[in-house]
Length: 369
Image (tube, rainbow, N blue to C red; front, side, top):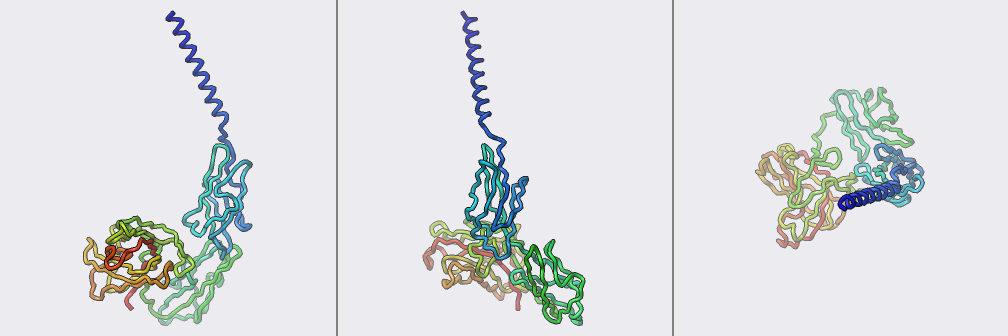
């Protein structure tokens, strides 16, 4: 009898095992893991993007002046595939150069993610030198200013110019150019033209503002002060006086944000500013609430503190305003730490405080005049 039970049990185990394996095989057979999830084409206004299926990236270069805030790409996919966001649905690509828009292709039981950049065709002059002097390039207004020693013959100068790879430049490199009046340099690139005005001035170059933060190529990380600081925040208003795509933002809550909440440049991101050379700060600020903005300046170890204030005007709420902060005339201590915050007073003293989001950008130290 025991032998019979053992035989029956073994049979049941084998039967159940066979059924389990059969079920597993059925599930495996029903999975489609070989479906095509590659984007075949990605077009914006009849411009074909470059699709890299290996890296999962798509880049589209559109004509200068294209509105990137509501772009509706036309996307070709393999049979039975779907994509999110869908083809033809408008997306905001204004900040895609730094924060690509994510698309995902689904087919069968697999998917692939793509990071998409749509940006304007742009060629830039990136360096401009005459002898051992370097020109100052303003990419906002496409101007170049270079200061040259006394006695320089402005009519026979041959600048060395660095510019976008693949572009053609006029006047050409190596030619002698008459700089007795401003000279227009033109870059031709991918069917577009970009012009710069270069001006040569005899004399010593004046001391320039010290850029502390601009969100792009000079972007030290702001530390949290009582609230989370978003260091890579998208600029909410790029059509004003501050067109750069990235800035810094934080929210100060009326209930929990009493006292001082803001952002700080200190420790590994500290600065080194001598009040003997610089006597003011400027900063771009955007809020929905009027009121004081405060810069607290300190030396190392949070010593030698001064509190600088400027008013964010009610006349231009929700727009970028440039605020100027005066460094005390009697300050001699080096400035190493900079703290930014909206309103310095506790809630209700002297005014009721409103919850607000604050954006800032383009922090500079201004030289003494």
